[in-house]
Image (cartoon, rainbow, N blue to C red; front, top):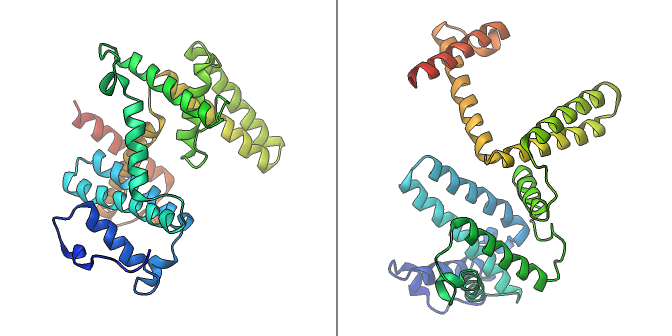
Length: 277
């Protein structure tokens, strides 16, 4: 990256993105930068990028707008970090990344930036968007229906995207009843694997079952990630109520029986339902 050309920029709070880019240059400078930052690579930074994206989503879910402001800054830093590493390696620059996404957004919205009519339904716009993306994949020699679905997505999200892609070419169950029947079939195969097969076989059958459950969510127009996050939050809330009730009794979960905790769980569940009525 070389020695920063404008060190005063680092302290200019009105300088916007240029200030952040200069800060990253200083951090990554091989002679005067931070030893930890200098050692980082695409691979070592990638987990932080994923973590920051989830923290953005968490702030949105909690409607914590001051927190969201900070988390969006953290996520922006990840883009700056990756582009700095890419620039040092001669792959791309921050400006080329900005140009790339700007060109992509213009090309994918001909009804806004081109001559196409804006008089379309949301469904038609979605179909047009997917047609443009398919053309882009063809230009990258990604001819397969499932090409381009990122392998490092969370497994449940990737399952959903794979299924949506396959459904576009007609590879899909026509009705939710077929999906429910498949869930029953896969559950039975998991039980058989548990009783008679190896652990690897159980892993495979569990994956099959989860994949079909994701498919059912898609058929019901439910985001499985959102559904599972809500259940995680519900479990956390109710188990917290169980622990609080045990503390009131002068005990704790480790010293209680499953039956005692199960009764308190049911009580917490009833209390939640009654508070909503």
